[in-house]
Image (cartoon, rainbow, N blue to C red):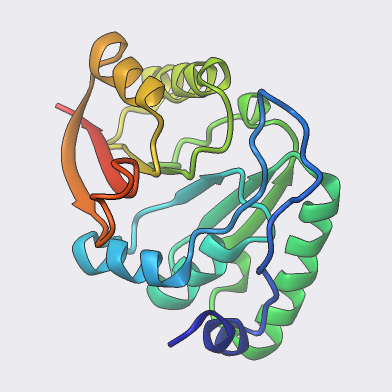
Length: 199
């Protein structure tokens, strides 16, 4: 299936990028391609008890894709109010066609580092949404949440920066559990997924 086919299937509109983005701390919106999501979930599965948090969800593509295929709760966090409003419109459109589990789709408008990690949040998705400074703060928030509600958690990184990887490898208790390479890895070593978990 091509991008347009998936958009029709899910009854959403998530294509395009943010051409006018200027922040150096928060990166521009760019949705994960559907073919890349297909590859990820060919090698990585979600359980019915999982709850996914997508940092920098933009218009919600990952959220609807996961909900459609796995029917697990998904929370999308987006700081851009315009994209947040589009995500809400996409949610209304998606639910007209896919009513099952409609209370499992959530969107939060605000900064990722200000999101209060919930006790059932256990899978955290990052498509290079912000600088290493912001990423460090969010990982700290995730680890703090474990102090009151310990659970198995995993970080899913797509197109990870070297800074993200160095930080996780050397400054946190997370360990690299799995690497999923994409076909054009020879051109760009960042074209891959890294799955981090706690030992």
